[in-house]
Length: 466
Ligand SMILES: Cc1cc2nc3c(=O)[nH]c(=O)nc-3n(C[C@H](O)[C@H](O)[C@H](O)COP(=O)(O)OP(=O)(O)OC[C@H]3O[C@@H](n4cnc5c(N)ncnc54)[C@H](O)[C@@H]3O)c2cc1C
Image (cartoon, rainbow, N blue to C red):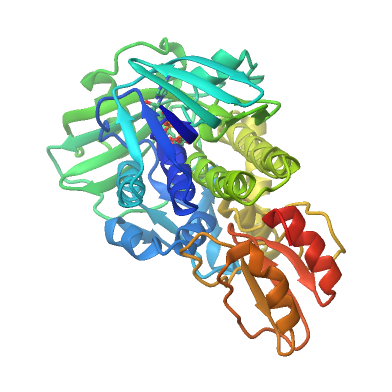
């Protein structure tokens, strides 16, 4: 079987990437080892930048139909962040189980006619000058490119022989979806809490009588990673936080996790790319992992399309690593810092007190909130130093066709013509007099100014030709 791109893994990263590739008209095959979706949801929260990206593709309204809650703030190590201060149309976290995000993306992928081959585990991978060959069960697939979106224990990474350097986990925690036989909090609140030497728990309603419980304490630090999670362990955690009135009746699923953090040194290995958890893992504190993976996909998808369909330079594909590696490195840093702030030792609590004070200063809140929300991401793009270069456009118009957009002011028709080979269909929007801007399909400004020659250079770089 021959396709343009093989995507390994139908988690949120793989599905978001497949949707982007499908939109660009590339033939794509998604290979997933599980016979069906597990229905389990690790992640529960989407950040403002992911909401913006989904809105760019007209997926925001259907996302909100599936969401449980708009949470008007975020948190940093359990300290409240005010997201209203951010320059975004979506200054809130969206409470939505990961499974529902995957279902939404899968519906888009299917609509675009892309096949997801479930029940096929990738076991072999080789690459050569003209392409990549992969074997998954009885499937033998040849493609121009392959993207490993196969999670933290990535087979693609292992088959490439790529290291996953970083830090071992220091803090062991449990996540469990449970039912209760007694009263429990019915409102969804942020996990705003102070660490305690006896442990802490966080409980949120997921609907249909199911609650999400996250907990950690001295017992979890002692237990081996593969120890079964028993009703007794869960009941002890519930009682320690909520007292005897909140009683467990059942466990739907439960899993141990740690704050281990690792990142590959290179996201690109010839014709093979790594994205999402396959490229970076970290503690779930602040709710960033799924968001990072979806954003990786929005960065890489259109670049593969430009390379394959519009004759873009191979160098364009290197910008995926250049732009996205530092973003995840920053998330690893902020989650490591959060882990330190979650330790209930006296000196850590002292540091936490100072950080909490700082976060009450609006400017400090804005820095940390923007970091977690992903709204402060600015790519280091080449070109004359316009203040907008590399920034996301907070009020970007919907680009549901996945193409770039030239936004011009009055009298800039010449620039519109210059951009024509990029999209074939250019929308002409009024901006400031005499200035124009070229928006990449991921909503980042690739060029802004009034010099047509500079625009031609930018289009050659990002659109393949001008
Ligand atoms: C307790 C917890 C809470 C979290 N909360 C949040 C949150 O609120 N917000 C947030 O943004 N993130 C959160 N995360 C992180 C988030 O769940 C992950 O970052 C996200 O699942 C990564 O998506 P992915 O698609 O990259 O990888 P995965 O979701 O791991 O998907 C990888 C897919 O690849 C498949 N696969 C693996 N190997 C193969 C193979 N050899 N062949 C074929 N298929 C294969 C797997 O079956 C799987 O379907 C949380 C994580 C945990 C543990």
